[in-house]
Image (cartoon, rainbow, N blue to C red; front, side):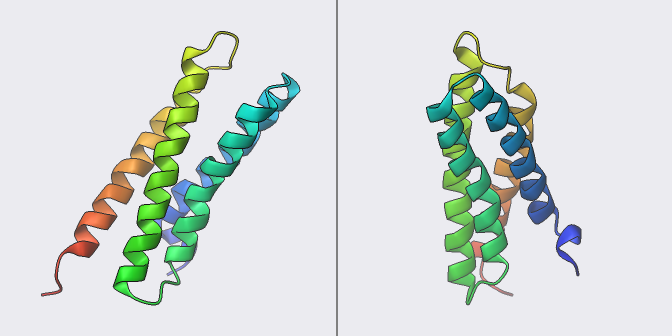
Length: 117
């Protein structure tokens, strides 16, 4: 199986590319602090999901997915701020993609925690 066949790896990679484009637009508006926060947390989701693919154990896999989920929560916060603040580009599309990622991560974590039959 290639990484492009792995749904969560593909979705988080695509999300990272969208975050990069969004933060570049924020930087052109001189919103450097928000751009930096979003770039860090938004791309960290995919980096942690990718790292989980090489986990040393089930516990390590769950731990890395939980970190990705925490980064997704932080990214949601920054995007919500952008959505509510006047003068910021509307991040609705990013928020809807992030919601899908958050739901998938939650399902991965809960199903991986279940004991092996």
